[in-house]
Length: 439
Image (tube, rainbow, N blue to C red; front, side, top):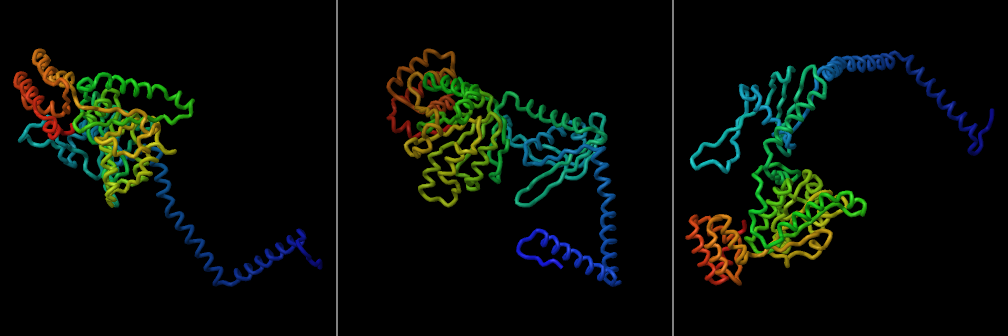
């Protein structure tokens, strides 16, 4: 017999063969034992029976997939509500005998004492109906865990996937038709994990704002140029993002300008508060990465965030470094507009408003003589003589547009409004400043 020495490969092979022969010899000896052989046979039989028992369900699921196209949507996506509205436009949705009733959000056109409007939709459960020559059914379920999530399984019999995709495309098209000519407003959902479409308001005309000459035209031209230079940004290796800072005293129309810009440029408006106690660094970063296409992200009163940080408020989860990384970190989304507003620019950390994070700082000041007269003429375009008197009275003085608007809303007659504005011009500036309100 050959003696193995060292790491001879041939010796290693002989040892392996010897071990394998020993294993088979031991196995044969065990199989000759009736108890062991019987137990092994029973185990194999049980495994086979278990596999055969699940086979019909597996075959049925495969057959069902062949004949039935199914789509699944849930309430964490805006298409869920769009699909519910689409269902309610169908005869089935209007006549369904198993339905959910909720009170619609208040409408600005509702009058005092008017009963609230009710919205109906298919209730949780199974619903069958015909659509476009196909039998369809919906299974609506509600799951409650860390958050409440509603799910709809939409199935169509004897239909290809393309037919179901076309139906969902029609859902989206109708939803967008309802939003035509309106500014879509998104806010952070109650879990601070995503954006939620909360409202769609009529677009505000940019020329409805009374600002210093050139501000409207400059910012609109800058944003249009930004959206038209995507290829240039890529060629230059510059992140395709744009940041604006609107700063000035309260009541000068900073928020109104952001809303009007979104309407003028047909952008979605995403409102975000840094004081949201449920918002963390990771959540903020994810939100800014998942904004809707062509969106203007509005972060109001950013100076309040710094004030709360100085107080070491435990409710504020966002750190300053987390804010900076979310705005222009490596993972920050491109193709978006960020607008910060503040009443106190001097309170902001220079790192936040440096070039690259804030590309265009714009001061929105109080209104002078020409702006006060122009705002008056928006309410009373025929009262040119009164407007000239107002212009003369306000020479060398300034006032917040919100205060002027307050007077014009209270005094509906041109003579009374002009008289009141002239009287305000004669009051001490400190008195006027105390009544300033944010619009």
